[in-house]
Length: 154
Image (cartoon, rainbow, N blue to C red; front, side, top):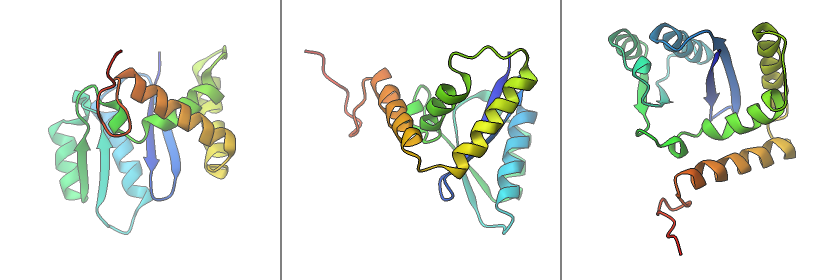
């Protein structure tokens, strides 16, 4: 079992991430440091995170304050509120679906190959279509339309 820790820069439309053996605060802090390193000018950074307890530790909050990183948590069970979620659909579709990698190293290489291709081709019609499908899937999971109103059953 591996966990993909994904990061997305909305301004640059760039996606990156790392695989870890387990979820945890140390991995979250490492991801935050990679985000800060991607923006070395010291400007404030706003990071959207889900409500996983590993994202909320005292060490993470202390580091974030010191390095001008504002942690913004999405509501529980609100994946539709996190813009990175739409990018995981194409990642699953192009790098993981119908695959049988012999080991985690090969799987990680395939994920990173997709990320390199995706960042070079972010506006590719197949990527955009997969992102639209994933947004629709996420919204439909919770019965939410674009306006945030619940879909009424007939």
